Length: 188
Image (cartoon, rainbow, N blue to C red; front, side, top):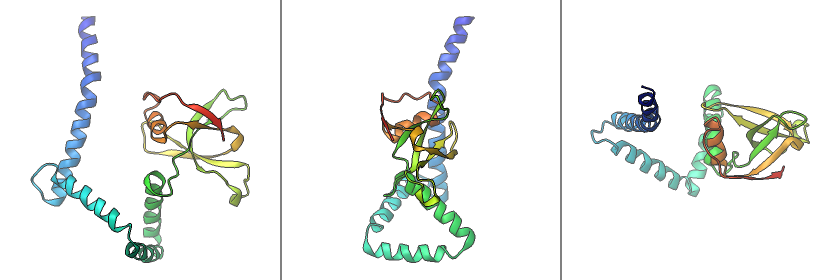
């Protein structure tokens, strides 16, 4: 009986991630197809990816920069829309834009003796404008969640990691379960 339970648990570990991945992908594909009124699975995703790429191409032109400036000015005048638009734009720019902010993974000592530490990302290397010249802003993503906490800490408690940001983020979000290649440390 114990052996059957072991096989069952191993089967769960092997099959559930695959089933969940396929189900989520299928849901997304069929949802996009439904929004666009298409009957061919995946065609909506292909059209969406092509449209986003086309917008990115057009966004690289001088004409778009002029249009974007005008659109930004317009949206800045609308209270709720301004908050939603600028927050979304800043968040996307932090991860994939030209002004990427989550590219400096760090290890932060939370206790004086360095026994308690956590991983995060420097989002502001200088807080001089806030009157905190010796501090940095560090964002701590939460595990198994799409939230996090921004904490201001003395830069002396921050150790920069020689690792890819995406690998460190995957490590944090997975609750430390995902393996991260060995990282050499350097002081902030």
